[in-house]
Length: 273
Ligand SMILES: C[S@@+](CC[C@H](N)C(=O)[O-])C[C@H]1O[C@@H](n2cnc3c(N)ncnc32)[C@H](O)[C@@H]1O
Image: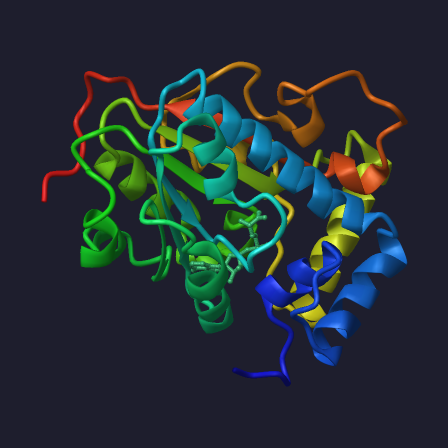
């Protein structure tokens, strides 16, 4: 483990009030707080969104197998806990490419025979979806919920995240859902939020983490690989089927993150191993 460089998982863990972090992670986060003092609320909002998404998919939509890529460090109310509350038989496979997440994930998240943590890299689409440890637990002939929560904004444009996601969508079994949350730049027409997004991106990418891109709607929509989004589309996270009315005005930093879910029609092609 390299404790001389900030890690995405540890900085995020720190923003959620977790303990698995080092001085270098806290320094990277301090720079973010200078311009986004409520960034911790952004992380909490992102988790809240994930919980509503999993509840919807495992409940109403009847999805009983989940692949959560970029799972991060174990925290409160993890994907399998929310899914298995809806359906105790729901299978959940967590994936992360950070060895610390894998070590902690194995110990803290593999709590029952339906929950597993597999080290793998999002960028290696073919090997990931054919990974023996993943297909042992997920039946790729049946619909899955593919969860990319807070992950794609850490993938550089140079790696062509849109092409990577087209491949995932092509290989997804018909009837699957794809959920994505992502840092967002609403553009110059929203001058203050645009300036905040640009400055946050600069700090994330140049001061510590080396990634954290705030992208425009069109670019984020490309990551759904041409699939249609279910209602209400790609929106600020707290606008995605909120659990109740807002209790306060939204902080600016909460307005530069969006999310949505797409559905792959049950009649289209999928992966065959
Ligand atoms: C900000 S955390 C999000 C954690 C969790 N999904 C959530 O939203 O609460 C992003 C996670 O993605 C992981 N990650 C980054 N690049 C990845 C890649 N190429 N493959 C798999 N995981 C990756 C990081 O290690 C980190 O744990």
